[in-house]
Length: 236
Image 1: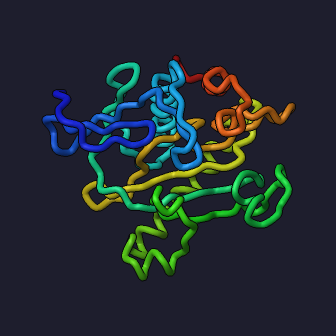
Image 2 (image 1 turned 90 degrees about the horizontal axis):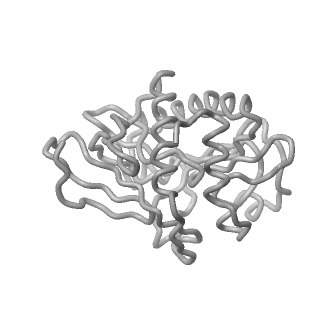
């Protein structure tokens, strides 16, 4: 597989074309950012940990029937993935109140949400990823009705699979975001699933084991990511 030119560089990952137009290389960097890029640092080993963590999760989801873009690990920091047309929508599921939900609705942190709350956000850093709904998506042609329905379905299937997995490892999956794209007409899970894009708490102590450690200046960010990985069996 020949790695060619950089196609896209995000806040923590880069995408490179290959000699196969159906496949690209997803490169995980050590860059870490929060608050729409206002807080940025380099954290040693982060790219490697997130790359391997994401590979583990994507393989687990694929084995459970969730189509993903993941093909295989290439090296410590890179994975081979499908070259998809991404939809500019973030799908968020909240199982426990935290983060922006508490700020928006005045809800105390840690409240169990039953049923879980599902939210759409427009993926646009310049606009600070505003919340949207199905009407916005339809009016502005962000995705078809059928694809919206499929994204919601796959997001809740993912929730069931991962809640169970993390619970067995003594953790609470508080919330998370997913991004989807189209590959040859099929809705497929893309981007990544790592502690960068979800909240995970220790079930007994409430210790935060995710990117909130970086946002809130708690320290031990990569150590927490590695602890989560070790608990669920990610080979680092």
